[in-house]
Image (cartoon, rainbow, N blue to C red):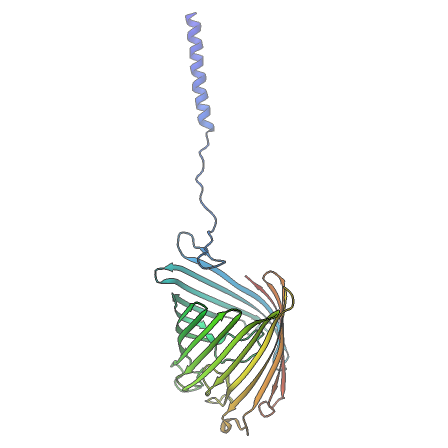
Length: 354
C-alpha cells in the first residue's frame, strides 16, 4: 500500500508539473497598442488636425481645375491648374502663430507655358503678418467681369484686426519697378506702397473701402465695394477712383514704352448674385470705366472709355465639384483699340475643391 500510495503521489506531482508547463506555453502577452489616428484640431476651424507629438495644427487644401477659354477674339486655349494650400497654426500667449504657403501649377495644351509658381507665402503672429500675399486689392466682385484693380500680389508687412462686426488693416508694400512703370532705370530697386482697408459686416450688409498710395508715382487709388442681402441672392456694387497712374490701378503702356500712358481714372460696377436653386447660381454684371491718357504718348485726341458686361454661371455637380461658365463682352472706345471696337471673352471651368 505504501508503494502504491507513493507511485500515485509521484504521478500526481508529475501531472501537475506538466500542466503548469503547458499552461505557461499558451499564455499570450497582451500587445502594447498605440494611437494610429490623427487627432482633429477644432481651435482654428474645420479641416485642421494636430501634427503628431506637437501642439501645431495643420490644414491641407486646394483645388484641381480644368478650363477651356477664349480671350480678345484670339482663338481658344485649354489648360489645367492645381493648387496646394498648406496652413500651420499654433496658439500662443500673443495670438495664433501662423504660416501659409500656396503653390499653383499650370499645364497648358500647347506644352510651352507649363510652370509652377508661389501664389502666397507668409507668416503671422496675432494680427501681424509678413510675406508674399494676395493683397486687399485682389478681391473683386463675383463673376470676374469687373476690372477694379491693377497689381494684386505683393510682398508686404501688414497688421489687421477684426472685432464687433468691423475689420481693418494697414500694409506697407514692396513695389517692383514694373509695378510703378519703370522699364529701364533702377530695375533692382523696390519702391514703397502703403495700403489700407476698413470695413463692416453685419445684418446682411458687407462694405469695405480700400486705399493704396504709390510713393514712387505719388498717386493713389481708392475703391469701395459692398454687397447687400436681397431676395434670393445679394446685390453687389463697387466704385473706383485713381488720382493718377499707380501700382494699384489698371494701367497700360504704348509699344513697351518707358512710362504709363493710360490708366482707369474712375469706374462703377454692379451685379446681382442670384441663388436660382441650392446648386445653381447666376450672376449678371456690368461695369463702366472712364480712362485717362497721356495724349502726347498715346496719340489719342481725347480720353477714351469702355463698358463691359457679362453673366457668370456656377453649378454644384456634387459636394466640392463645380461647373462654371463665364461669358463677357467689352465695348471699347473706337480710338482706344485699332483692331476692333469690341471683344468677346469667356471660359468653361470644372473645379474640384478639397
